Length: 164
Image 1 (tube, rainbow, N blue to C red):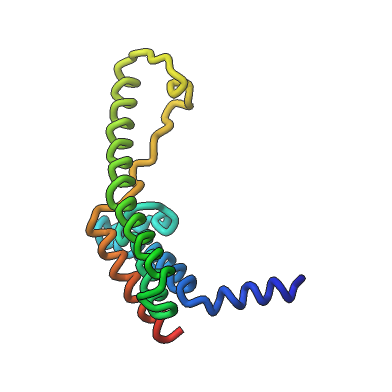
Image 2 (cartoon, one colour):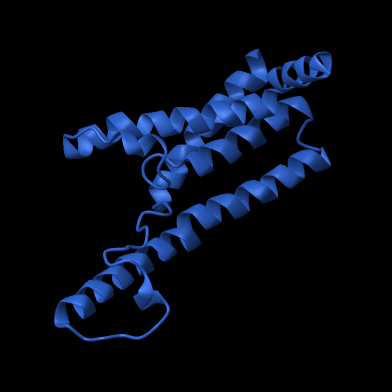
């Protein structure tokens, strides 16, 4: 049993696309710390685990995966083609739909605060939530954050594709 686990983990370690993708995700999440510090002059260690922000770990992860797959299986492979489509969907989602959901959360939080301050009583299941409960506002990315993340991902994918 332990031999199987060791072989499984060793197989994952030499899987270039997987290691490239995971490395790009971790790298971009860590890069959010100094970038946030440069922008706001404060350290926010939650940025390492938060969604959203510069650069996009979504864009980096799928770009690294796709780039490394180009080296491993070649651009004619159906696996590579699948990864390209997957990358397009994830990047569109990260920079579009999820970003808009975050913008909606900002408006809903503001509306809830104004209703609460006005003293209006609202009888809904949502009104029974603990007071002060807010929707998460930073969910997605601005398009430039996705593009920068994708650039980081491509660079990581090239490094892993050529030298891992």
